[in-house]
Image 1 (cartoon, one colour):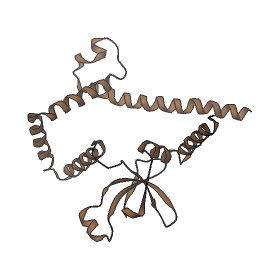
Image 2 (cartoon, helix red, strand yellow):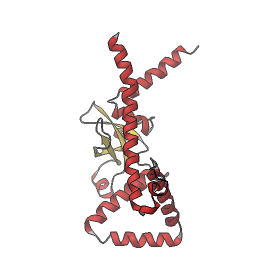
Image 3 (cartoon, rainbow, N blue to C red):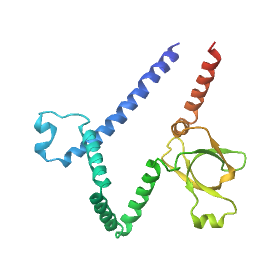
Image 4 (cartoon, rainbow, N blue to C red):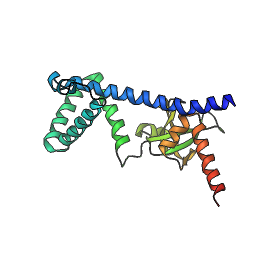
Length: 209
């Protein structure tokens, strides 16, 4: 009985505590943007006290203004000049172009990157691994393959931000009717969360008159 109550209490407070810590960390990180403002313009100077999360508001304003500027003709010309300058710096151009391409693929509504959850037989036949399709194989790679191939990202558990890429024949993959969020929960929870969700759905269907 004691153990059951202890576990129930942990299930309430631990997720809540971790969520608060993560949000606080992100807000503190965003609040550092206030250092970009002159001292006389900062909230603690104008109001006499700090406003938690004001850095997040400032970050959103900066992003929107940057988007507005970049969407017009003059802004696009300026950004092209800026990118042309970065392309001349050896190490910077590699990092910048890679990050920009990744973000463009992920944020673009017409992109298929990270839109499909797949199963592949890895590391050997008969063992299936969850992965995400990131795109088609490069032309040079495709020319060496006998079948139409795709590039997939295999995440590690419990940290899905790390992993590795594999080039696999498209016909050797199985597409799942699963959204990205559910697949990430499955990876991060070692398969526990998704299985719990499935059982709860089954229970709700069986108990419904």
